[in-house]
Length: 324
Image (cartoon, rainbow, N blue to C red; front, side, top):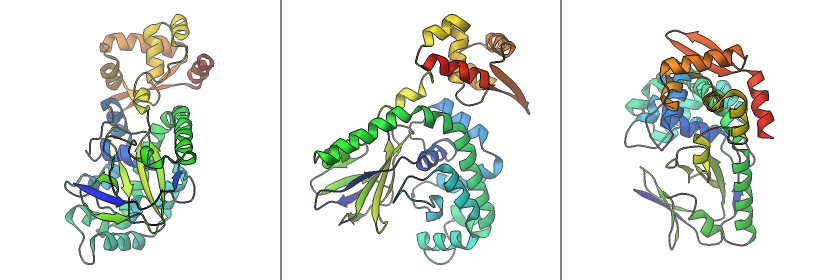
């Protein structure tokens, strides 16, 4: 099913480099089961870092057959400027519960909301805490990835700028992803609640995301802007070895397996996640982790039945040396 955004004149394009929609896309993929191409290793890493209350809060996003959600889900739409994750999370913690209830009524009409949103309506303060906590946990996991993606995001700023200056925004909009098409009357966007919208004199805000290749988040009914969040071109390269520069020299210093292990540890992971992702036998992984721990390059922390591995500040400095 498709929604049509009718465009009668050359659209005004703006760009927002805001990570909050990346976090929302990762939550939907990793926690709510709306798979959009996020690699399994990242899905498991995110799911393992979010607490029980956060898992409970994101369950409404998993409801099949609907993409409608209250505005509180994204309290700061990228309209006038970039929005930090800290601002997004703080806004959720500070949001009065009655605002969430009003948003639910606006989204679903008066009366009892759909079954998947009833828990949020019955205990709105608890839902807001849970969702804010989930966003914080996801951000803690993805922040190193976001920092590493800066060259890709800078390149996208340049690409959008060139399209805007040279008068080719329609070509750019049709090339945002394989799930978006530019037809005779405007944009066709896949949605579970299809409709027809007029762009009018509103501007279009593009929000590149670090998400799976099929991820797409759109807002078509804001009175001032239409915004479209889409996977930034080249994001697939970030799901591979996290540190590509000078890996041969790093391998010469610590060995190829341990160099790869340090590169993969862009966020803390369990031993089982590392063994699966790197395809190393647990006994071999333990040996290499012992050597890295002896060199003060990783830490090990037991949480329940799992042992979590993380890079140390010493390891970060070492990797930064080989990135130069």
